Amino acid sequence: MKLKRAYSPGEVLNMKIPRFEFSGDWQTSIGNPAKSGVWIIWGASGNGKSSFVMQLAKYLCSFGRVIYDSLEESTGLSFQMSLKRHKMGEVKKKLIILDREPMEQLEERLRRRGSPGIVIIDSFQYSGLNYKTYKEFKERHPKKLFIFISHAEGLHPAGRSARKVEYDADVKIMVSCFKAWCKSRFMERPGEPYVIWEEGAAKTLKDDNMEDYLNDGMGE
Image (cartoon, rainbow, N blue to C red; front, side):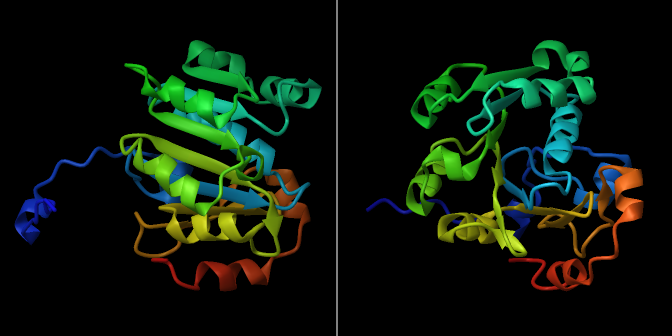
C-alpha cells in the first residue's frame, strides 16, 4: 500500500488554502471559511431558515456561481415568492436553480469542467444520502463547498445521518427566533448571531438553549 505524503508543521503553515474573505455581519457570524468542505443549516419551521438560506445564497453569489438543488420544495409558488422577496434576480446567472435534480445527476453536473464551486442541497433528508454515501460523495469532490439544509429535531438536525453530518461539518448553523446561530471551525469562539429579520427577532424571547448549544464543543 502506497502511503500518502506526510507534512511538517512548517509545510502545513505555508500552504495557500483558498478561503472566502467575508465581511460585515457574515464575517462576524462565520469568520473567513475555506472555499471547500461542508456546512449544515437546520431549524424548526417558521424561524426564518428559508430566508436565511436565500440571503446566504445571494451573498455567496458575490464570490462565484452557486448551485441550488431544490429537492424538497421544487420550483413551486413558495420558492418563487422567496426568490422575489430577496430580489434574487439581481444575481442573474450566478445562481443556478435545479428542480429536484437527483444526486446522481447533480454529481454528473459537478464532474464537468468549470462547474460551480458552491452547492446548496435542500434538503439532506430528501437527498437520499446516508452517512456513508455522504462521505463518499464529498470525498469525490474535495474542491467543492457543500451546504446541506436539514430538518430539525430539538437543537440538532433530524435523523442519525444528519446528526453525524453536523459533527463532521466545518460550519454548523442553527436557525432559531429569526437568527442564525453559528459554530464554525474558522473561529476560535462563537460569533454573534446573524439577524435574518430584525422585526421578527425583536419580537421573540431570548433562547437560552442556543447559548448552551453554542458554548458546547466549538471544535466538534
